[in-house]
Image 1 (cartoon, rainbow, N blue to C red):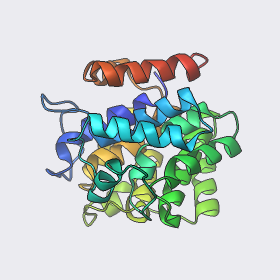
Image 2 (image 1 turned 135 degrees about the vertical axis):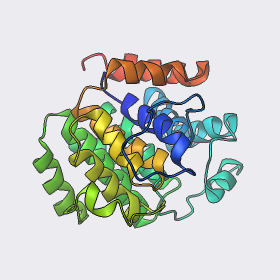
Image 3 (image 1 turned 90 degrees about the vertical axis):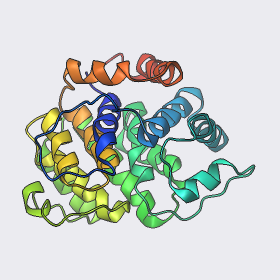
Image 4 (image 1 turned 45 degrees about the vertical axis):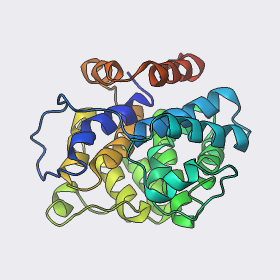
Length: 264
């Protein structure tokens, strides 16, 4: 399995550790209370936008608000919650990692890196129009797209370091002891990318992200979105995540799969 399922799996596996952090890779992937949160909800809202009209900002905003208001307990930040209720919502300068957590469908819907970047920027700026918010979405999308087309890890690392000036010269083991909860793109996206770069496979990527003890569901979603393009997502993990989607989210996922994923 490949695709946005990587982000969904990461979100669900990390969902039980967002406010109950751990500093170990030894944990059960899925627990009884593992569920989708705002990371999955907004990823599928972006997926729905891309299925309907990728050129329309109004359609994007409509879907973000519709999905958000349909799942009011998704775990959104306060400013985004306010945005969801506005009649004419405007971007609010966010630099938080919400732009990166929802961007993965843009990489899969694009036929070139430039198109992926354009879609990623569109997906971010309706809320996260701060330069760091845009940068986090772009860097994540670039990593996914490059992984999708077969780039190796060093090519991905170098591209992100040069284009986005993120420092990726560290390992998960080096930062785990002191790393703490951080919702900023600047303080969570590079670490999420390294969780992928430092991993042996998809599952190891997710374990790396959760073991940092930070914003576990979002960082696992970001790392998982990249790993979901580079590796195969084990069917046992992917199917368990799909089983936990409700009908509305499942239909949005399947619609995106039918439109953009049949060749993968």
